[in-house]
Image (cartoon, rainbow, N blue to C red):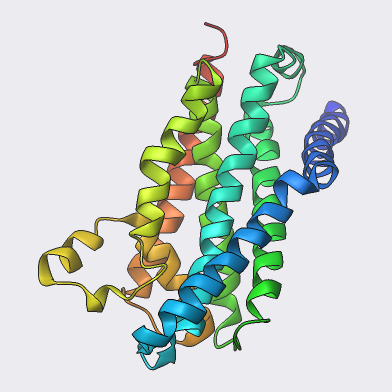
Length: 262
């Protein structure tokens, strides 16, 4: 029993060190982590919101600019939560300093959590910046604050874990860019960011329900606009199950040394 407080302090020191390092990395290279999403979202609002939005009119009883704002915020959260972890953990593998963590007394689940929380922090920072940008173009009310926070946290966790798992198996920098290019980006654009799935033909409407990002975007949009294209209980159930399952998988892979001790 006497060793328990000491072990707890050791674990907390290791976890907080990873988290501080990840946060410092995000802030230190803000020109690569925070500024580009702000510029990109501004272009989306100008092109899709101002120019195309005038032709589209209202979607679900809301102006087009107002409708796409939550989707653009969530898109930035997804991309940056994923991108932060996949680049940081793969960088640790590539730089050979991941061995320092593996030989430390820090349990693997805390190592996973430290990197994942770094991705969540970046997702929230970028999401906040994009939210501020959106306020220059449209008005965003807050209908259900709990839904906003819960959807953002769960989505960020899911994709931060996805980035971690991808980084574990990646052998080179090409392999960490393959998934976001050919899987993540198409699913995001087809996940209801720029349109309501009620506008689609029947076959596309049904196919859209196979896209997990649709549930995340719709739950997040519900928090702002009080409207959703999917069942919210199903949406949050999918996010919770995905986060829990992917965390368990990441820890199992770490325990086995998959992609690390090869």
